[in-house]
Image (cartoon, rainbow, N blue to C red; front, top):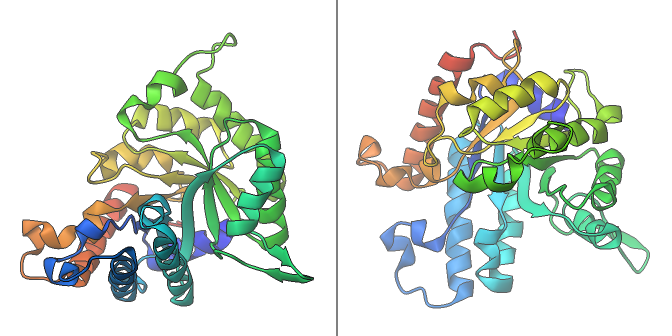
Length: 304
């Protein structure tokens, strides 16, 4: 699946991922009128997402759908999540389910079936939330990772494990030094590289990627130098303070090696004075084009 994503990035010359972290409060006022139930809110969220997907699917290779923004609306919200995942895949986009799942082996296996594999039901194998990729948390160790690795091999999927996250306090834990002199995030990065070693594709990257925040360029540079075969999912661009110059270190000499997520900067772009007069999906497209230009000017041609 990583090879397919890389090929789409090269085709579009765009390493942008649109984060559909869609809070109902982000919607335009006219979409929020007379809404009083989770079901009504979720229908509007799905409509909002689909209109944005329609407007950007020809210029952006991927979307990231953060499940927390849907879970808070209960079962109705999960229907909107499922709708968004299926709709984006139907429009030819790579879908990253941002769920950061992990647990001990058997429970991790259930999480993996939900997003990457298939669930057995009376002799049939059915897919629940058919994402292409999933974010996971590796801090329970390999027994909590193996079910995901097994499923990505069996079903041509990918995962991104948390390594160096974009939040301001990530260093409280991730930047602690171990007895061997390595930072915890470096140790996790080495494990991620190991976990994906036998899934490396034609572009040199494995199906086990890493989440590496744009807001920590020094750490990102260290990780890029050390993790030759690990593809990065890069949050933190835009609203969180990360810039194209800061995240340039995440990419290799071919302009490959990562995909950059922006959520509020795109889905809430219509609130920005730069896009005054545009409706929300027109503003989202304009913001994606501006982001593409910003990234391509800094990173250079992708696939060179």
